[in-house]
Each structure stands twice: as structure tokens, then as C-alpha cells.
Image (cartoon, rainbow, N blue to C red; front, side, top):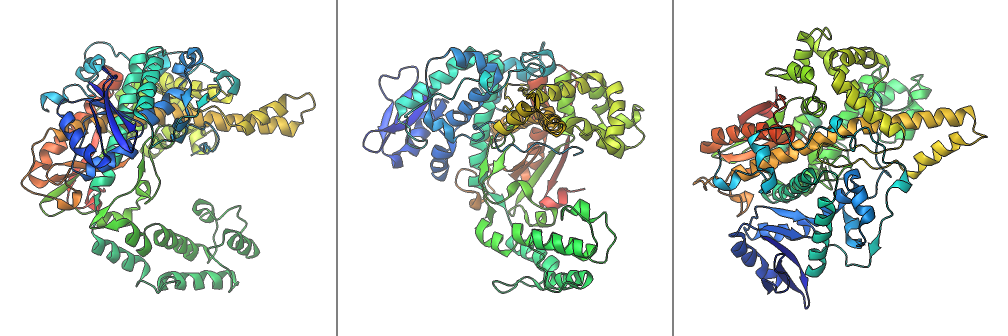
Length: 621
């Protein structure tokens, strides 16, 4: 059963069964919606709505959780950008609604940052996303339904072409997101499903849309439940690092002392250390020839100003990102509630639009403390991206190096390199396109030992250098290069092009190739993480309520284990202490089942660094 939710005349909300759309199931006032959804949720429908972030928060605030949904905004962005759906979009006459333009990363390559070189449940949980076609994925039986990217020429290795290859964005004058009439919701859902069915790999695309929508639900739930935060512990960290809280407009005493030390060493008593331009000029005047004030570059120089300057910059970062002002703004009633943006980056990785949840420094993690009678289950997927690469490429040698052990240590034991640090540098260099230094020297060794894996990323880079798209395991495609990229290539092809034009064109082509090289791995790893969290969310929701409550987590989560944090390949579950071992086992089992879901019976494992702790800081090391 699929139920669409959208607006109706006179400020009402309509709920429509997509199987019988002529007669609405209900037309209610907005404040009546939670009770209506709670009643219909007993039938376990898939909710179809314009944007989870528009509809779900009010339901959670009323204590109503839903099991599954289809987020049209996020699904539309995937369908619009996927090379697997290119032919289907070109053949479809229906317009793309204008409100879909609000989706994250629908704009394509403009603004994309390229990487620098060198650089056991209840029966309801038996099918991961309750899509019948995917039941066998979770069982791990038979050959994988979604083939690896390297085996599919529609994915990595095929050029979709330049901007002219994608159909122009067709738009209609539909309402903006948040006020979408239910009729438009029904029409857009049918359009997306029609395109999915006509895509190159419909079952993979269905799974991707289901995973992305589950991620959207999780993002809202993370904000609603909040990450447990002890303000007193955080303030103690700030006082230990920075000194006493300063008066408004003043810097902490420890920063002021470091600033005086830097100015004295530079013999420039008035230099503003917070001004990039002024500081760079002062460093050069003191004979420190640097191109930037980046930490790695400053460390290359031996000068009395460097050590206090690095210390100042570290404290400045702490003050601006997680200082007293951050505490006042973001920690309310013992919870940190950041605004997650699922699908907020080109690869499908999440972003945040406030709070900096994806950049919590280690020195403030001690403030993440479980409620009394509760625990934190912290899980980190070890070396996720290299393992995903092994699965994508069907590289049994690389998968073997990772089996039952630290992947980097496995590479050393296989005799490919001498040290674990070399293995890490080589793998990262291969995935990010490093050609110089230690990475450039070590990557050829990987190519000999793991030819399938290295061929996959090399092939992805070559596609990007030609201006084409690459596609993840389930069907998310990289954006086409921006207009400036194409203009640079066009200038180099001009009969009057100079050697400078040609060198510039080769350089930007290699930069975009590094982006596509990493995109296919990072994007597929993001899919694995979504599947992991979605499976775990289903497992946790099947657990009975506990007598130990966490009231600050809200009505929907106060009595049950719940996800409270996500960072690319790391999650935290807040759980009653007497459920902690059960939750930890579920976390590990869902990681394994997600590997089978995406890679079938290919023998690549996804071990976790798993800890049951009172404080996030206790899980480190």
C-alpha cells in the first residue's frame, strides 16, 4: 500500500491511496495529520511525499514514527542525474516539476570540489526495505542481482558525453516544495516509477531510491532524538584548552598570549592573525616563504613563530566551531540536534546545514555522554572504501587481504609493501589519483597485486578526463563537468591554442578524472552506509520498549534504542544499558547483511570497530 500526502484546498492535507487515487483516504487539518498517519501506519504503507524534511518533523514531535517512505525530492534528484535513466528520461514526455529544483546537488558539476592529488528481528524486518524483489539480497543466496560496476559498461567505463548528451531540464510551473498538492505528488511518483522501470537497471535503482528515502527518515530522526550532550563536560574542555570564558568581543587569554608570542617572533606587533591576507604578508616579511597558511605548509618551516602560530590556529578553530557561542546555540536540554542533509553532496554522502555534526573534533567528544541507565553503542566501519572497491571490482585478492584482519596489515602480509603506513598511503593514493611522492611510487605495486581494483578506478578516471559520467553500484551518477571545464577544453582544441592553453586543459582534465576516480568508490560506500543504517533502524524499531527512559530524546525515542549520530562510516546508537549487547550484535549483523545485499556472495567482509561506552571519547583508541 502506498499513500501519498500533499496539500488540499483551504489549507487541508489530503491522503490518497495510490492504488485507488480517485477517492482520498482522508482530508484533514494539519494538526489532525499525526493521528491520521498513526492510524494508517498500522497497515504498514509506504508514504509518498514531496520532502521528508517538510512532513516528518511534525509527526515525530507528536510521537508518530513511520516505517518507510518515498522521498520525491531526493528520488527526483537521483533519477534526474543518473546515466542509467538517461534514455528513459529522453523518451519521457512528462515535464519535471519545478519544485524538484530544491533537491540537493541537482545543479550538476557547478560548485563540486574535486579532490586534490595526494590526497534477529521481528517478521517485519525480514526484507530490508520491504521491496519484494530485494528479499534475496538480504539472504545472500545465489548470484548478486546488481552486478559490480566494473562488469557493467553502462556504469564506470562508458562515456555519457558532454552537456549536450543530457536532456535539458524540463520544468513546469508547479508549486514550490512544501506546498505540493496531493495530485502533483501522485503524478510525480508515477513519473519517477515509470522512469525507474525503464532504466538500465531498474531493481538497483529501486533499491537506491528506497535506501535514500530511508536515509531521509533517519536524518530527521537524528535531529529529533538529538545526540546526548553534557554541557558541563564541554565547558571543562573549553576551559582546559582556552582558559576562562572571555568577555563578549574578547579572545580567551590563552589565545591572546599565543598571539603576542607570534607577533614577537615575527617582529610585527600589530599583525592580525585572523586575517589570511595580513598573516601571509607578515610571514613572508619574516622570511617564511609560504603560499598559504595551511597547517601542512607551515610545518615545513623552522621558525620561532611557527609553533605558537599552529597552536593559535588550533585554538581558534575550537573557539569558532565548538566554543561557548556554539554551546549556547546548539545544545538545548542536553541534546545536540544538527540539521542533517541526506544526499547533500554529489556522491550521496550527507552534509549538514548547521551545527557542524560531520566535523566534531576529538577533544569535544568527551561531552557526548549517555543518559543515566543508558549506553552508547559506537560503531565504525573499518576501511570501508577500500573494501567497497574490492566488492565493486570483484577483486578477490584485495578482498582476501581484508578478510578477518586489518586491510592495510593484510596488504603488508601479502608482500605488496613493507609497512602498514605504506599500504594506507598507497590505497588512498589509488582512490584519489595521487601520482607523486610516496603514493605515486607505491600505487604501481598495488596495480600488480590487485589489477581488477586498480583497473576500475583507472577506468573511472579516464571517463572523467573525457568529460563523461561514472555511476555507483546502485545507479547514482557523477555530475557532468561545469561549463568552465568545457570552455577550457574547447580553448585547447582551437587552432590558435597556445601551449599554456593545452597544459591547462590537461591539468583540469586530470583534476576531474581524480573526482570521478573517487566518486564511484565513495558513492558506493555511501550506499552501503545507507543500507546499513536502514537495516539497523528496522531492527531497532522491532525491539520492545524499555522501562528505562530517556525523556530528553522525545516521545518517539524515550523508551527504545535509537540512532543518534552518523558520520559517513560511523554511527552511534543510544540504548538502555540492558539492551546494549543486543543492540551491538544487531549493529554488526546489519553491517554484514548490507555487504551481502550489495555484493551478493562475493567474499568481502565489513568488520566494525565496535564499543559499548558511557562517553563517545571512550570509544577512541
